[in-house]
Length: 72
Image (tube, rainbow, N blue to C red; front, side, top):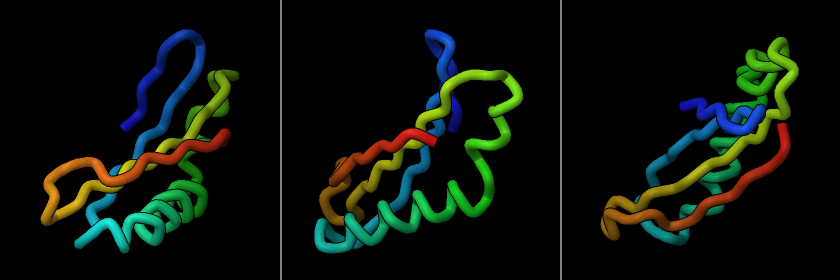
């Protein structure tokens, strides 16, 4: 998902984890995927600052377990 606001682009990726113990691994997987697939590069032509953000939801908790962000 991409959200553009205030002259910036926020690229969001969500992953599912079985429990809170797997949240960190799921976040790393999300960032690795976004960088490997060049998600930040797709919006580079707009000359907007690009920020990557990932969230992990828990299957059992049915809630957001962890969120992390980084600059493109």
